[in-house]
Image (cartoon, rainbow, N blue to C red; front, side):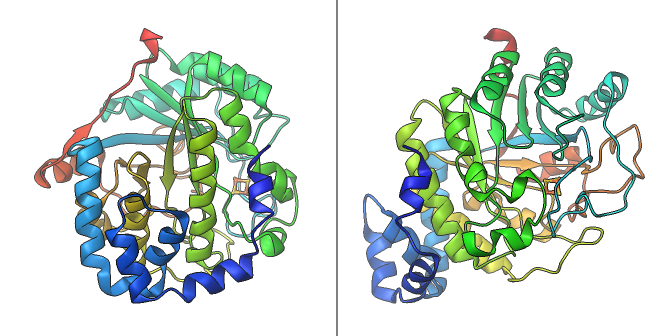
Length: 369
Ligand code: SF4
């Protein structure tokens, strides 16, 4: 049994049609419900819910405070490599983009570590492209062992791996694995991923199952907002989350909201997700799920990030560099995507405090395991 079995019982077109058919009455029922269902999620992300955004935001804020208090977890991504054998039409690191490739060595990883730690971060997210000959499980394990003395919490966002490989990373001290399906629209998935292992929709879809089987503490999901209809994609992502939470109940879960940003050689967004719609989506996740962590990155604008803090999110990156060596080794190299909010971590921490929330730099310590 895996999520594939559930996914196969749904049709993209029928699901999309049923979301767009939701009415004000469906939204009101969803808002009044004590235990919200995937059908309620459809209503809450539907166009019919937009006039109810203020109420959704109020409820989302209350539920988030009840479960998480007034806290925002701070983390920084560390890009270890931009080598990639895949072609993804929306990514600056795509195999067919003629950019200088780089994979950090030990000395460079430690140099980046020093720069990130200087800003106060204790939680780091290691990111790579998919280049199995250079950036593989042994490389990740070694990097994690190198970083363990310096960071309390290490997560990874790398290519999908097998269960045994995830077990190795878990034992090495990895706390969370983030893997985004990008789009759940199986018929068009291949047009965005024409070459490389990532073009295998099913293997990617079952990745969170393998992460769960390996016993990781946290599993992160998401879709790339801008590829396909965001409402339908998010319905499937929420369905996936619902299945995983029931199946791997020992693990925690997070959802991220990457909205397409400019990068070298990428396609324009197919679908524009407005700021208002992104708020609606964040609130909809919170209203159906009190426990899920919701994360916003520096892809988003200063204005958006200034205002989203009290509305349901629980973690934020800050001062991010999306190129390997971007903090200290090679600050001028090409980024995976352009950062929108370029403010330093210290400034974001002050913003969080001014909003009445506490920036949390550390709430976990690998050293105590
Ligand atoms: S999205 Fe990931 S897998 Fe695709 S080209 Fe970019 S780095 Fe490679």
